[in-house]
Length: 499
Image (cartoon, rainbow, N blue to C red; front, side, top):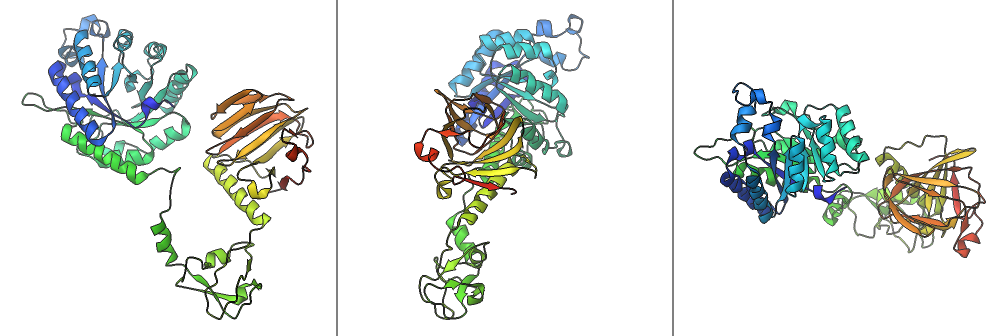
């Protein structure tokens, strides 16, 4: 994903700033003030048309054709566009241009424009899209009035050419009524195109601040609106925002981001924990309990309030396979302050639940007729640091496995004398060392591991990848660390028939 798209606010000049360069520079300055005020990555967007070729010669003098008189009346010279772009750069804004024809694409390159925007009406203009792709510049495409299948083609087209692409949900109505916005479509775009940034280009009423907050909550990371500056002679259209409205729009978008938070970094505040603990039941001795005794359910009762941070809760006491041994004598009604003694089965259950959670999040369903193997090369106690979860789906003349690597986990260097295997990442990122080659694989990327090649892998954030190989043989793994090789394979593996 290109960083050029990160948290970008795009301000599109309304009506090509009426063809007035000074007025255009004023809009740029106003937008730059807003960007600095809120500390955002702001961009001003222009539209380029080579009017001498874009408009059919028979229609250049007619007043009855939609849009053409306006385009001609706001014509700017090449030097004027350069002046506006220089103004953006002076103000620290990102330069974005929508070209509507091939000569305008060439002009974008000549002018050093950073991002090229594809208008909704151009999403199937393949001669234009080809010219845009050949620039190798990052592309943002609006998708108003475009079917999902046309968006598929667009994503595939730029993906094959390795051109950075972002798509914007957009409703091509001016202004767009709220019942037409269908913001849930943003989530569909995110699910359908992993790795492609998704944003929202809005045409709703300028004073509507609810829509942008909902767009952010749906996952939009790029936001775009038409903007302008009204004067005694210039009136904004019904979907363009003045500077005050624009500032409010940005403020509410940022508020929505703060409210939305980061789903990958959710933290539970201590105040939240303390507040809930005040409502929980603590464990108390129903009868005298001697030091060293195993505490049973009949020995205790549950009641509020909890009297200390060390006291066990009813939830902790009732956990599956939790066993408590008294570390002291307890009198009747005394709070029981013990920690459950860990056992292998409890650890395995927690590991399995974490792996299943990752598979749920990745929308991967292994099926029920599988075998699960926990490889714990340095013991189950250190599994979260060293190991992996191997799900064998098929093992015939060919083999398919799903391998789940927990966040922060690594799998030590090893090789196979017989088996050849190919890794393909399905979810997350995987750092792989294969022979002398070190690389990071992202979803969709794969790596061949030939027999006899020493390889290892690890992940910071967690990863699920598919291993397709020749038949898996249990005695065909050879580790670089002699301590691992010296352990009986069945002692460093836990096999499960079901989740």
